[in-house]
Length: 347
Image (cartoon, rainbow, N blue to C red; front, side, top):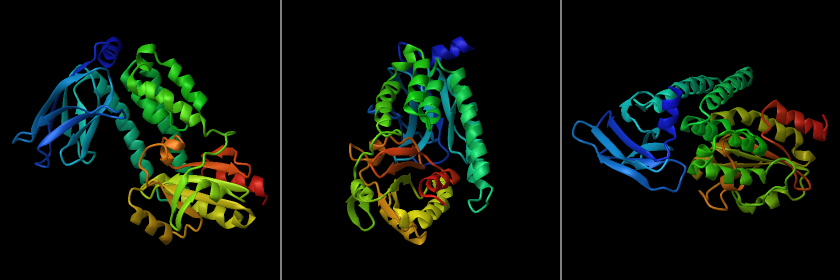
């Protein structure tokens, strides 16, 4: 089984994909297969027939994560390209699932376990004093499942997918490089892995001990810059979040408490939202009394994009910046943030 899986997931001659699908309704007339996280264009298209069925075939140069989209701009599901006949079927309420090949069938088992943990985390009540402890326990379980699955699939696209989009989140640049080197050469040479190798260099620029990177800010009160926010402050917490991010909502009470306690001692928070709706962001900030500096990342990509500048993989994410511009801590969550500020400013 292991040899078959490795061959299906890492064939040196590329992937000949063949995917049959069944849509739940008449919502689309065409579907598209697109390689995720690369600059490649659509790999293939297919017409949806009168019975809401389609068959999409073609060739890819290498194993990769892909998504199936419809002509209304909806992403229907993701899959791992493999040399097997696959089928996409409705799996509501989650959407659709692709199965039928050894690679996707094995990956789906891991994905379901991770989805169950995520669903449990989202059912937590942010107002419950025990929600933080329960969330941390679920997060630890999530990381353990991912790490074990990467170990078990280090020689195929399943391991690559889980490493790039799950396990690497929260790692230091050194940890990313160490894990990257554990993959065999044929996996490290995949397009997605080569791009990730370049990303590690970007991520390293904002590790603890580095100077913060200035960037323009579009704040509620007008255009500014991170340098202007940091000027004259003893500590600045650069915080990335979004209104749709549940873990970010868990952090909000701690941010409010930190600001109330230490703002008069030279502490500032610069929260940068990744929301695409400026109106939704603005209303949320005002309604929730976020009295510190609030900005929104409206660039959507390129060198001035906050996500690219600070090498973000997920949110919430934060960087604690000292008076001399040095990043002295990263990703301080909950009580850890308050403890660090108390250590710096005193009780």
